[in-house]
Image (cartoon, rainbow, N blue to C red; front, side, top):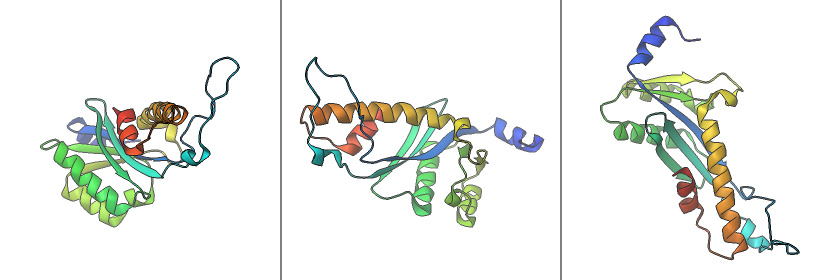
Length: 170
């Protein structure tokens, strides 16, 4: 629970929910409807899409605030850059970031960044993603992404993962 001082501190801040999500070769629907007496057929080689890690920020006021896409897992350096970009996009606003307990969210370096940028960090209850509103957003985004990916595969159309990830978040 937040202490009384923390609650007062939050009243003047914009709360932004931040989390990471992965898009892998498994990010494709494994079942879909087809015409009667036909089966969906796809080139198996096309199923192996590249790995894309996404660091996302959403808020009640703006919706999707910022996206950071990477072909590699998100690390502390990426998170540091993302945090600075998020502050630039919200110039003049005091921020509170609600995030999970991933190790690099709590490093000494990130604590200094939060202090320098006047960010109030809020950490979710450990092992409790259902209390983070951004998880519902990810569920919708992944469903939309999977549907678009399957449509491209079935119709033998090119698939640009980054473009479709951004479109799914839109």
